[in-house]
Image 1 (cartoon, one colour):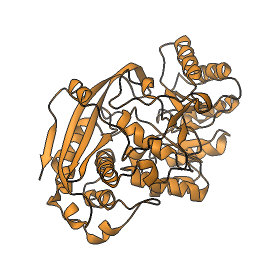
Image 2: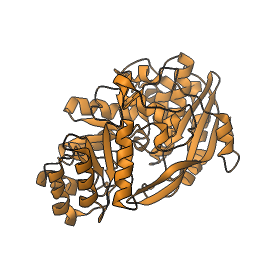
Image 3: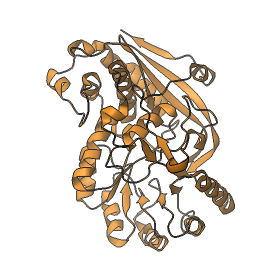
Length: 398
């Protein structure tokens, strides 16, 4: 592919690394419970250096139709060969520069057009684009924050709290996060685990605490009266209560309650974001680059939110340091006005795949520093890559 782009690195090989990273505590949502995160890491080798991307698909197709085995297969059989030059890229698509700010990244900009012949599989495509973007920016000596147009050196951090075995354990967990300095708490909810636990956490945090909930599509239209009762708890937002394709019911809820409705799973890119906003189905957007096919589309969605005066925040998918670094850089843009799920490494992992992200102290209490090194600004720890690998990596080469 890069043969058609002057002055861009040439992709020589793509490596697919499967790893199993133990979580420090089980993480439970409405769609399942995890104790280990199975991750597909993508390394792109170019003639100017390497780059890493992280696929955010889960082990099983429960949260999303995409899952690790499927992502690995579609990259190995279709997407990888396309990037290795077995598919020529239309020159008009290659010349398009989707970066709203900063230096041009022609190789990364060509990834989405080159992979458009494959329907869907945004998480797999996003991992490849992230790896190419990392390699290209490292070759330029530029950080992701600089290329994205980051306006802050530190970003506020929220934390996502899973469904606990008991109310007492939930309150203990939330108390610990508040003591660590997290500036916003997000509670996972599902039918039967909603009003009581959320009310208990609101009482614990007090009226000024930043609290929101995430339903992960667990409710139906019949639950609108119940969800409207959350108005009494003064939440920042309720995130994705209904199925991702059901904008109409989200719009009904937004019309019947005072708590802002935020969409996550429904937002696959600029077109779905604009559609949801115009229908009144959402007044806040959770931007997840992996769900949108990559960081370049996430930047476009950010710009649309700015133009339409819609608040945004950066969602998380239990990323290792590779994905977390890119998310923190993204969250430093001006349109991200609410704390995201860019938690410290220790929230999920005793050891991170890269150098750990640690919450700041003093004036930066409850914040993470935006990496300023080339590319993501972090380094993959080869010893952990090997230790956590259940099998040898797969290599695709020219």
